Length: 164
Image (cartoon, rainbow, N blue to C red; front, side, top):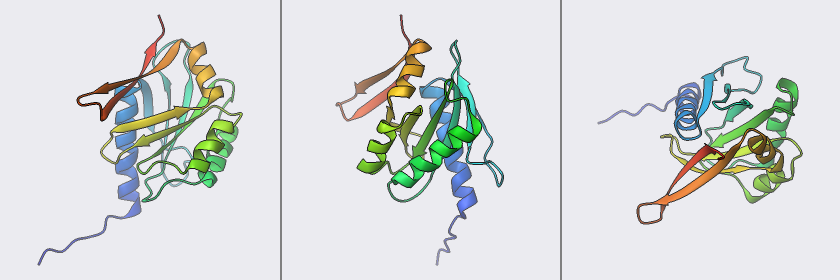
């Protein structure tokens, strides 16, 4: 008989934070460090873009087994207001299950620079959305989002690249 232990939420959450950090570092060229813990005040990863001018980044990682709801956008907005200069800081929300349509609509409608990231637990970036204020920050930094379909067209490589 094989005994299976259920991993505790701290172990699962930490593993997901590390997977997200690896994905964002390699694919979106972000410099991030893990700051999550009991007193993280809503920030799991913090850092900046690798290019000048730098954009400060606050990342929340939510390893839940369902799509994230608008409540998570409200939490993300509160975290951004509490921690960052909203003119130079972007808040990103990562989920392995994605987001409800209302969550996406709320993020897009926000006047704060927000990004939604669908990143699997093994660190694969499936999709990302930047709202208008976040896109403006990227444009000011000379960055643009590139999505390239590879293989038979079912896989996508997503990257942030410097505009020429």
